[in-house]
Amino acid sequence: MTKTPIIIDTDPGIDDAAAITVALNDPKIDVQLITTMAGNVPVEKTTKNALNLVEFYRKDVEVARGAAQPLLRNYEDASYYHGESGMDGYEFPHHERKESDLHAVQAMKKVFDKSEEPITLVAIGALTNVALLLMEYPEVKKKIKEMVIMGGSLSSGNVNSAAEFNIYADPHAAKIAFQSEIPIVMAGLDVTLKALLYPTSFEQLPSLGRTGNMLHGLFYHYRGGSPETGLQLHDVCTLFYILYPEKVETKDLFVEVATEGPAIGATIADLHQRQQNQTNTKVCVDIDVDFFNEWFLDSIRTIG
Amino acid sequence: MTKKVILDCDPGHDDAISIILAASNISDLKIEAITTVAGNVEVEKNTQNTLKVCDMIGLTDVPVAQGVERPLVKEREIAEEIHGDTGLDGPDLPEIPTKQAIDQHGVDLIIEKVLNAGDDITLVPTGPLTNIALAMIKEPKIIPKIKEIVLMGGGTFGNWTPAAEFNIYVDAEAANVVFNSGVPISMFALDVTHQAIATDEIIEQLSNIDNATAHFVVELLVFFKKTYKEVFGFSGPPIHDACTVAYLLDPSIFKCQHVRVDVETKGEFSYGMTVVDKLKTTGKDPNVHFAYELNFDKFWDLMTKALQSYQTQPN
Image: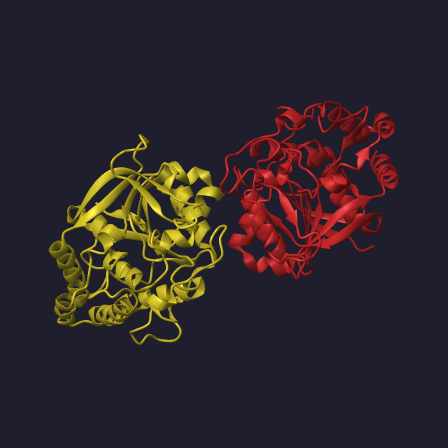
C-alpha cells in the first residue's frame, strides 16, 4: 500500500487532537513530523499536547516547536473553546518524551530535504510556521505536493462575521501561504461546519476503546458546537479529504486574505472568476456527512 | 574594548564602504558575521557582492550567510537605477568570488550568534530590516539579548517616495517589528546621511591613497556619484550606510536626539515613512537615538585613516 507522507502543522486543540489521532493511526497515512505553533493556546501548551498524543499512541514521530507568536499581530488564544490546557477533559499520564531540539521550520526543512517524494503539508493552525518556512526556504516549495489547510471561510466567520480563527490569528502569514503558488486545499468553515459529529456518534465513543474514551473526554469539554447538536471536528476534515477526496466537493477558485481593516483575516474568493484568470485554491464546499461519521467511528474503533 | 557586530546588508556601494570601514585596521569592531538581504538588488547578487568585497580586503574568517529573498508581506522592490545591474557597478570585480557563503540561513546565523553571545552583540542593518524582524519573530528570546541596533534607514523625508526612504519602504512591516521590539536603536536616516557627501574634493583626497582597497572605494564613489547626479541631481553621493560604522567607531562624529519613531505601514502616500516625534507630541517613550548632525571633517578624516590603514596587512 502506498502511504501519503504528511507533515502536520498544528496547535492542539481538541479538534486537532482528533485529526492527529486519525493521522497517526491510519495505515494509508505516514506522519513524518508534527510541528506546533501558538494558536488555540500558547506554543508551550500546544507542543506538550502534541507530545501527549504521540505518547498516547506510542508512535515514533518527532514533535518540533514553532512560532510563539504571529508574524505581525498580537497573539490571542482560544482557550474558551479548548480549555486552559488546550486539551481539557482527559488526564494524560506523565511521560518523558521530549520535543525536538530543532525549531519547527528547521525540522520541516530537514524532512523536505531528505524526502525523495513530495510531501503533503497538513496545516491546521495559524499559518505562521508555513510562512516562516516559505520566507526562509522558498526552495522547499517544489517538495510540497499540496497544502491541505483548515482555515478560512467563503460564507461567514467564527471570530466575527468575516474571519475564521486560524486565518485571523495570523492573516499576514496566510497571505504569504496563499500567494506561494503551492496547490492549496482549503477546508474552511464552508465545509467544517457541515462535518459535524452527530450526537449519536458522540455517544458511541466510550464504547470504542481507550481512544474513544479519551476523545469522549475531550469532546465533552469542547465548545466547538455541542454534544447535543453536533460537534465541529474542523481539523479532521483535512485528513478526511486526503483519504476520501471523492467524498468532498471542491471548487477551484482564486483566494486572497484581507490583512487590514475590520475584515482582517477574512478569505475572499473570486467567486465568479471574473477578476482573476487563475485559481490558487481548491475550496471544499460540501462533504458526505453520514460517511464522515461512519468513517470517523470506524477509525476510532480500529485504533481501539 | 572590541565591540561585537553583525553586519546585515545589501551591497550596494555604500554597504561595501561600510564593510571596508568596519574591517579596517583602525576599527575596534569584531565582525561576528555578515548576513545579506534582498534590497538594493536581489539577495543572491548582494551575497556575491559581499563575498567579493571580503575577498578584496582579505576578510577570510568572517562567516557570510545569505538571508531572505523577499520582504515579509509586500512585493519585492529593488534599486538598480542607483547601484547598477550587479548592485556594485563601477569597479572591475572578478566574476566569481573565492570566498563562499556558509550553508546556513542568514536569519538562523543571527539567532545563533545572538543566543550564544553574552548580550554584547550590536546588529548593524544597512538594508531592509527583513532578516532582523524575521529573526525576532522566529526566536523572540534574542530580543533582550541584542545590545543595540545601529541602522541606516528612514528619515523625516524620503528618497524612494516623497515620504519614505528605500530601506524602510521595501519592508515597512519588518521595520515596524524592529522599531517596536524594545531593543535600543540608533538610527542614521537621510537627515544625517545626506550630510555624509563624497564631494569632488573628498574623492580627490581619497584618490591619493595608494592601495588596492582605496582605489576600489574611489571607483565605487565615481560610479555612485554618477547615479546620484542623474537620479537626484546631487553634486556628490551620500555614503549612507557607512554612518552606522562611523558612529560605532567614533560616536562624537554625530549629534543625536532621543525620540519616538514609528513606521507608517498603511498610508496611501506615506507607506514606509518613519514618523519622528521631535517635539514629543505623542507622549510615547523614546525608542530611537536619531542622528541629525554629522561632523563632516571628522567623518572623512576617519574614512581617510581607515583607507590608509589598508596600506598594511588588513586585519
